[in-house]
Amino acid sequence: MTIIVTDGLTKTYGGGVTALADLTVAVDAGVIGLVGANGAGKSTFIKIMLGLVPPSGGTVRVFDLDPVTQTDQVRARVGYMPENDCLPPDVSAAEFVTHLGRMSGLPKTAARERASEALRHVGLYEERYRQIGGYSTGMKQRVKLAQALVHDPDLLLLDEPTNGLDPAGRDAMLALVQRIGTEFGISVVVCSHLLGEVERICDSLIAIEGGRLLRADRISSMTAASDVLAVEVADGTDELADALAGMGMEVSRDGRMLLVPMDSETAYDRILRAVTDLDLNLHRLDQRRHRVAELFTTKETADV
Amino acid sequence: MSEAGVIHDIGYQRYDGPRLGRFAMQQALYVHGLRAAYGLGRSAKAKIFPWLVFGIMLLVAVIVAAVRSTIGEVIFTYTQFADQMSFLIIFFVAIVAPQLVSRDLRSGTLPLYFSRPLRAADYVAAKFAALASAIWLLLGVPQFIMFLGAAFTTKTGFKGVWNEVLDLVPGWGYSLLWAVMFAGIGLLIASFTGKQAFAAGGIVAVFLMTAPIVGVLASLPSTTANSLAGLASPMTLIAGINQWISGDEGTGLDLGRFGPVYAIEAVCLIASCLLLLLARYRKVASL
Image (cartoon, rainbow over all chains, first blue to last red; front, side, top):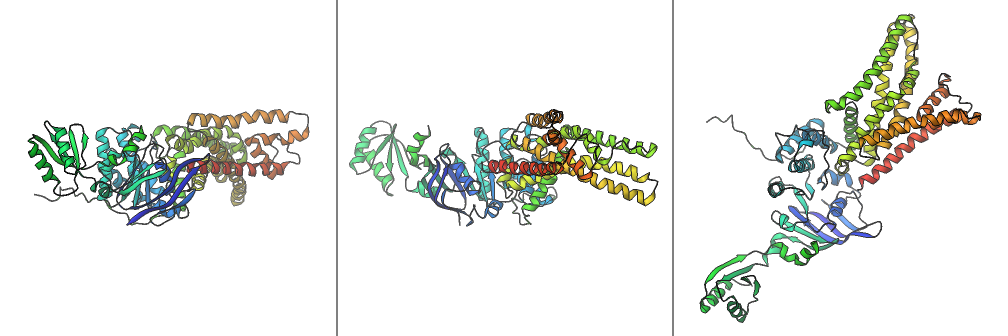
């Protein structure tokens, strides 16, 4: 099912700043990574989907609804977790999430029940009656996620959910996001400037840079075509490289390793034969999945 | 093995109950704001000030009622009660208005509100109604105490009670005018800063600094300036309207023929406060 469709989506702020330029994507349900450097237009895209800012050009449809004219219907089905700190320090998490549940139109008792449930699912059950001011950053991020989840949305928009978390906290948050996407049956858009982080949990990926679409596709199709074999031998790396090149393979060097595209099933055999012909000690021969990051090497330098 | 002790993780449950509309959200926000104004559902610290003010006003009302029922002397009428308590109302607004709006600005909670179906207009309407109700209760409840004191000790039977009702209702109306005016100005000032102390200071300053201006204008030789002096301060403005409508001369103001000007200014002031608030939150909402 396609949940988000944009066609030529453009947003220009006053003063001529272009946040989004001619963005055309169609996204299927699942966990969706939205990656780009700071200022690439990720937050603007989210705000347009929420109907908070109107697009300057093009169209966007969420669940086949127009966020500009059918704002209420869209927002009722979408949960939003902002990037910045947005929690008052002097109320308890249970109370705060209940209040925001009511602001989403839940009746009083339903809001209270759903708030406890949401807090339990994000792993804050025991602590929910404590004041938020005493929470750690990781717990605050969980409260922010719980308030986005309280009204049972069909789509979650998470703006940098791992911001400010330590490595263990990041892993826990990403695992939680993945669980929401798979077990809860809620589609999730995860914004991040760290590609390596979201590629692990996403079904599909939208990469934008400077407001323009770099690539939007399913993760599986991004990595499938790019499998390579990594070969490492004790000595004679150069000879092996020449031999493989002589067999018509495109060999590239990566440190002490040789990378050979796995173009056919026979690639293993041909490499092994070349190694034995040269009488070299083979240390390693394995299939390596390209990390998605390698598809965006130009972007990585732009990040700095 | 017993099955009773096993905790079943029933997993994530979808919600298919009713989802209420924007009016219900507005109502929920209103009730939340009214409760917050009196510190209900908040820490004990947040309860101290509102209840202290409320307690003082109640005490004054009880004394007034007691004096009236024992020696029959009327210390304040219902409208004079509101005028006399104006400083307490200012301090109440200065504490409560920032509680209602500056807190949300400070902690950045507004994006969470405005990513929901709630609109800027709903937010402003709910907060305004909550603060106006809080101020009205602050005046209206003590006025009702005064009424009870008078009604139960009246010597003219049902007619006396009815006369008292006829005094109380305009008194409540007058309190409503106070409430609406102070809520509008207080919220507008508080909505410009996330720092509660600054907001409180700003509100007190606006209400208190305008009083000397009235004094200066009232001492000018021109009678027109004297008559219009009350326009400079929200407190004298409201007192002027009361004087124009009821013909009560007890406020020390000399309105001349400018009574309607007071009413027009009050309406314009309240309306512009609300419009400015709306414009402010429209801007915040589309962050």
